Amino acid sequence: MKELCYTLLSDGSSDKALMPILTWLLRKHQVECAIQSNWADLRRLPKPPKTLSPRIISSLELYPCDLLFVHRDAEKEPREKRVVEIQEALEQAAKKSVAVPPAVCVIPVRMQEAWLLFDEAALRKAAGNPHGRQSLQLPDIAKLEQQPDPKEILHKLLCEASGLTGRKLKQFSVNERVHRVAELINDFSPLTALPAFQALETEIRQVIQLHGWCFNTEDTSELASLSSTWECT
Image (cartoon, rainbow, N blue to C red; front, side, top):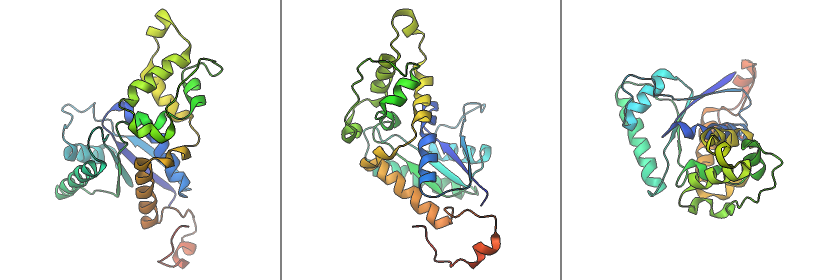
């Protein structure tokens, strides 16, 4: 396989920040080929679908892919409920004669911003003040999933890290900086302490192994010689 193309269908545009995490996880589990990532931007449609199954269908029509990530924030609901909602929507889409590729549920507890609250250096760089000395009180990583409003905490930290005040602070584009935080984090392994992240990683590892995406070669004869029971280790 020379390229793996994935599409992320998310709750909102701010959730594009999940894409560096997803790519990192694919790389971690030995996807060595080129990875092409797309965020399903349905806002440009004349009538953007509102419910999940039609959104999945539109995403696949506009952004065909080998792997579909479907994001839903858990918010106050159990993760299991969101998984069922996503699986039912995928089944409904398949009944519409849509070719649904392998899919993975992306369900952070509360909001995806909780997964960006652990790297102080990335926060400072994203805020445009990498050498700032303002004290930043990041939550204990073991308690990230317990934060009532991760988005508010992240926005506050970025504003504090910027060192800006007055008019300049009011002009500070915090939403754009959130995406930059995700891009600047090189290692998301601290998040493996979180149950929701563990669940995501498990799903990704399983789909990679099931479809053999962890092996990269241009020599098809070598692929043919491998046992059909070969698994990544």
